[in-house]
Image (cartoon, rainbow, N blue to C red; front, side, top):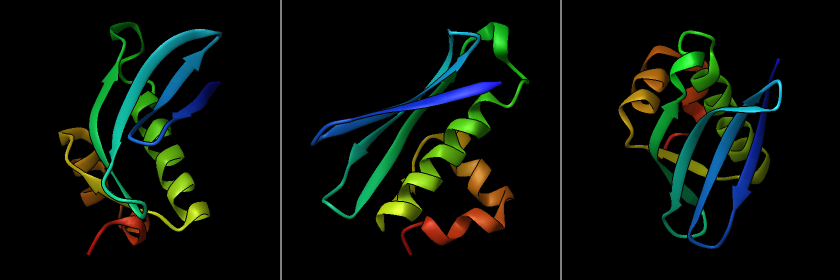
Length: 95
């Protein structure tokens, strides 16, 4: 099972994924004002490639945005491609 933890401060934040207590990946973001954040980097540890780690971190980011009335700007190629493939997640994108 993948566990995702969020770290957040006034300027930056991240979603870190863990499998069996080991760090499996990290998605970083930068705040762009108070209402939106930019997903700028996603990395998954090589041992966990293909296990849905990136998707779980992205879903955590979308969930956070929905619960807090925030919007997402996906600059990282992984996040950008994931939003394009999954129409049901696009409600949190900046228009």
